[in-house]
Every structure is written in structure tokens, then in C-alpha cells.
Length: 509
Image (cartoon, rainbow, N blue to C red; front, side, top):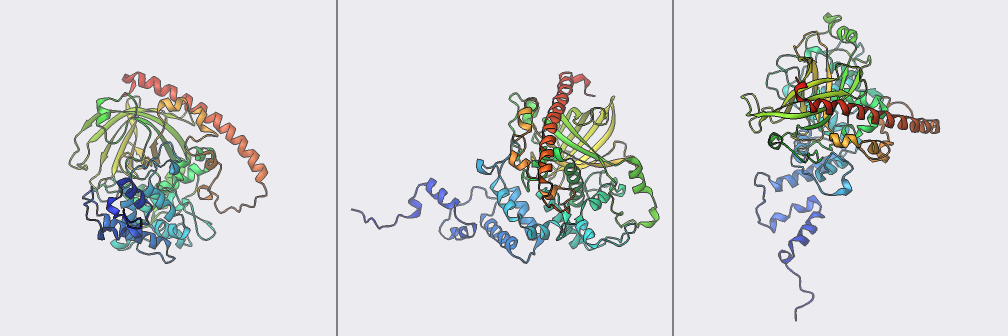
């Protein structure tokens, strides 16, 4: 008879039990596993031992009151997102379009601390300039610094972009607004050059992403979406869920049942329905900002903060793949270039001809491996507007594309401005969207919709005393009901021309 106290060698346990044991072990305890196991990992390109050590070190840094090692934090966070994969754990999935990920959930936890976010997400030149706050807004000092410091600024901006919840107010009392400084960068025509392709790229002709430009665009768009309270609630998942969707293949909506051979070969997931936001200044403000008193600003100094108000358009696009070709010499060679065509329709101003157009464009990789999107808006067969953007998170990320729009002929006098678009519901889902808008969870559960985080409040410094809570609640209920009816009608009306245009392919110029 066997001794009941005898221990069973761990390798004799069923694999399912071993897996269940290991998944509950703290990452720090996993470091000792190589002392007892010699199995080679399935992914030979990933150094699991080093990844675990870095994971534990990242936790230690983020939980330590003394924050340091921005370069290490940047590299580790980007690797965690690069290696992230969709999880089947429904407990952490609050989205219909973003696949959940345990890596993302852990990063959300680490960066939930205010001091961690401040240390690693607010290190770009925009935040440095905000904290300086020159006494004369009309005159700015040059922003020269060494290459190493610029690299750290880019890394901090990149983390902020992956975090993707725009930081609109900073300081102990959150009284300093980032928007005027971001707006100043976004609408500065000196940023739009041949070397940058007029997009969010560095001014060296490489088409490497300038993450400080992308960061500024996100802040401007986040401010403008937040100012439109009901729109902010509907699209809160894209703009208010840290790190969610900022990794490859995180868009999880099922593909259409009948896909063409071209769509099957498309690695970017182009075909479908996309939502777009476009912002622009009144042209008189735009011209005065860029061409008024140029002698007061040196070539390497930023323009003064800008806060004159912008117009915003919400657009729905429906696009289809039209052709696929091999990458060119200036493209990343890992994936092909995908061409597409489609139509766009304004959701909030049906009389805006600039929002209702045919569109064409391409998706491709840059040499550094980022996904670059180019679109053209076509009116009466003539290309009028162009956009250049980068997809945050990589191929098929749910986070979407962020960039610039501008005149297709590169008019040096503008206009130009920020834009972003992200993949949303299919047309069939749009037709049934009425039941999902309010109060159900089109993008977020209803409980999250009514919880307005002050981070997205453009008046974040405003004291919340609670004196007018009852009046505000009544007003919110009225606004929610009206917004639900209005947005439902807009989506329905937008859907009809999209279907009609797609039913007549010859109308797509």
C-alpha cells in the first residue's frame, strides 16, 4: 500500500492542473521555474525569462514613489502590447469592438496611479512647455535640446498615445490645460512639409512617426469630443479606455459572412464601416495664427498657445478593398499595399459638402513597421482633401488611425487640421443600432456612460460642489433621450446613402 503522505512529483500532474497552478503564480515567482524545467518555449523569438524579469521590474518601478527609467518603461510597455493577444476572459471584456487582453488589464492597473501617469506620460515637449508657461504668450523660446533628450520626449509621447486617454488637465489642482498648447502644434503650418508628407511624421523624409505630433492631435480631438457631451458618451471607448485596443488584431467584430478573395488577402482589415472625426478652425483664425506677425517667432520656436474654438464633424465611412499590390521601395516589406474606395456621410451636418464625398486611399507599412493610411476625399471626380495618418497599436488595432487632413494639392496657405478614424459596427449592425445607443452598451455599459470622468471634462478645473446635482440629473436625462433619438436618426439617415452609393459602384469616382 502506498504511503498516503508521499508527495507526487510535479511533472506527473496532469498538464491542465499544472497550467491552472502556474496561471495563479505571481510573475516574480515564475523566475525560479527555469531551475526545474528545461522545456524550450514554443516561440523561439521571445526570451520568456527576460520578459518575466522585465515585467517584475516594471511593476516595481510603477509602484515605487521614486519614478525613473523612462526608456526601460517605454520599451517594456511597448513589448507587452506587441506581445498582447486577445483573451477569452469575459470578465474583463467591456467592449463590443475591442478584444480584451490580460497584458492590457495589467497595464491599466499599473498606470491607474496618478504619479505613474505623470512620470511617464507627461514627459514630452508639450508638457514641458506647459509647465514653463512663458510670461509673454506672443514670444516663445526655442526648443533646442540634445538627441537623447528628444528621444525620451518621443518615448513619453508614444506611451501617452498608446495609453490613448488624452490628458487634458495637469497640475495638483488640474488647473493647467494642455489643449491650447496642443492646438498650437496641430495647426502650425510649419509642421506640414514635404519631408513629413504633411502627416504626423518626422521632418527627415523617413516617414518615421513623430509621436509628439500624434499626442498633440489626440489631445485636440479628445478636447473637442469631450466638449460635445453626448458624442463623448457614445464614443468613450475609443478615447477613454487606457491601452484598450492598442495592440495588433485587437479589433474583434466578426468579418462579413461573404468576403471576396481580395478581402481575404487584406492584412489590414480595411473593408467595413469606419467612424471619423474631423476638426478645423475658422479660416480667418487659421490664417491669422500662421501668418500674423511672423517676425515675433523664430523658426525653431513654437507658436503661442491657441484657444479660439474649433468646428467638429463626425463622419461615417464605408469602404471596400479594390486592389492589392507588392510594397514599394519606400514601404515596409512585410505586408502589401492595399487600395480601397468607398463613400462618406456626415452624421451631424448633412449639409456639409466637405463631409459627404467619395473616398479612396491606401494602407501600407512604413519602414519602421507602423501602419500608414492615406485617404483622398473626391468631389465630382476631383480630389479635394487628403489625409495622412498612423494606426496606433499596429495592424488591425481597434484604437484606430490618427493624423492630419489638408488640401490635396499641398496648398502652403492651408487649410489643414487633425483627424482620426476607427473601425466600428458593420452596416447591418448600424441598422439595428437603435437598441444599443442608450441606455445599453453600444460601446460601454450604461453605468460607464453616466460616469463622466473629469479627465475628459474640458472644464476639469471647475469645482464640483454637488449643489446642482438634481438639476443636472434632470437635464442629463433629457439630453440623453434627445441624443438617443437624434443619433439614431442620424445613423439611419447616413446609412441609406451609403447603401445606395455602394449599390452603384460606378458612382465611386
